[in-house]
Image (cartoon, rainbow, N blue to C red):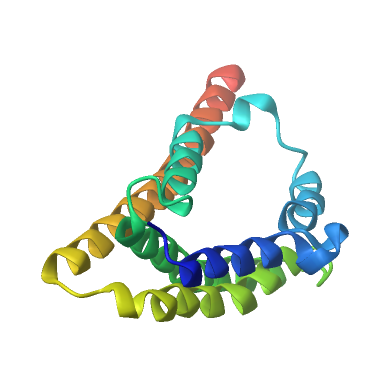
Length: 170
């Protein structure tokens, strides 16, 4: 059973992700102008690592493996995102992108620390044993490994395109 507090935390998380009632401010809609400025995503930009992350998020987010795995996965993801995305945001600003273009990252950095703390605070009463804590840790590691896999997949794609460009120049 998933306690109401955890369902409530999921609701708050999704409400924020979808623009707090303003769909134009939903995270995908904030991200799209930035992606378009880099040449619009192509279908071959989708990689297996991104699909794996999406499947992991869905599985953990909906508590398919149980409460503790969900708490760990979502809590770790939400706490890790600001640490990662602050660096991306700083780089994009150094490159001269406008505040409107980087709004996706600004919003994530502000909201996700709160979300991460919310996941763990709502779940604290349900951590009773070492086994509970181990499941939380395992959920966190699954989510973070899937997230790191996305970065590996992106790098692999970049290196592959560079290699193809080198071959074409030769």
